[in-house]
Length: 419
Image 1 (cartoon, helix red, strand yellow):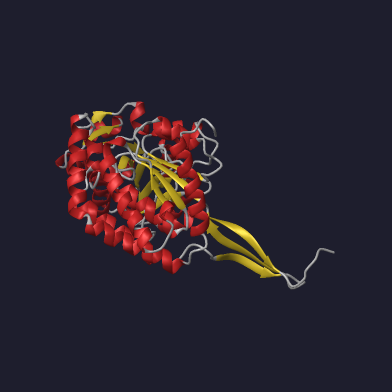
Image 2 (cartoon, rainbow, N blue to C red):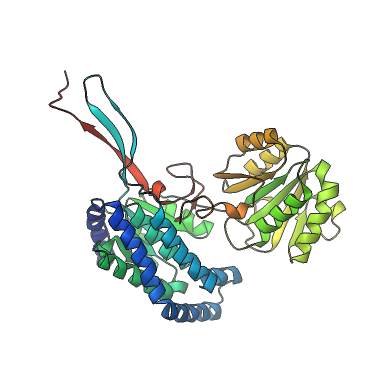
């Protein structure tokens, strides 16, 4: 560790010490800290909006893409979302200290499997400053210390938010160093952080696929990965046309630049003639470009011919690929082949079809008759999340406070010895 930047090394040491202190703090005190975070954030609203506006102007001048600019901007809606997330996480049951399972042995030995914090979490993210509050809240709720590394485009915004979070911790008499943020934009500091396996227990990257791959390949620390959100909706032959149109349009158009936005729709050939024209009109009216298979293009004259790469593309833009399939099994196979294991759904009136689809599709979230935009912390009752994992271990799907705990075995005896 002699080659690691001394400032980053010191942050790791402080986070490790803070995590051990935080592990002894009761859930009520951590809840108080979270509610104070909300108060502090509200008290700096005007300053935060001004600083964020400056970050947005600089990012725009630097040529940041439209979707990234939208993620960077803290609107009134986003600010209220941040406040609500803090309050929502505070209201959750304490995930630490739960007896996950236990028994009393024949000899009277009491054995318990107890939930405990992971320790120190490093979170690396781009553009979205609301991740700063989400990460701080989820980590505090689960008793973990966190080191944050936001993108340079949101530097001013992130630093101000982190400063308010630390002020809340101090007021709640919690260790301030359980929330730290790297202030320097030097990319080499990320490599230094990834080398601190002595102090950091888990890394959660949030950003583009390239960033996540580089991080996963550049560290021996466990990494919770979220590669892409190539989300699908399958419209079965018995789907209600009004549901199909509403769900697909909402899944695609409600917010095109997020990971649970719809990127591809599959429709059973028996439903295509009736539902596809309605769907095509609704999408076109909202400025969505349709890229379809040959059969889709025969029905929707304004559709562009889809190329093979369209089936595996996360557009994060007003573009949707559509394919006609002949069966539910074909739809599931297409999703498992081209999807990213993030969020996929079926629109059907059949319980048997929905059950089969849920069993066949290998994704972290599978929705029945609901928008893909609902997959995440809020609708799932998690308060806030630090990301959506497309991994299978240790957490999968929306990563909330309970997912940032591990466990230890505890045994209580009365002079017990092994015989």
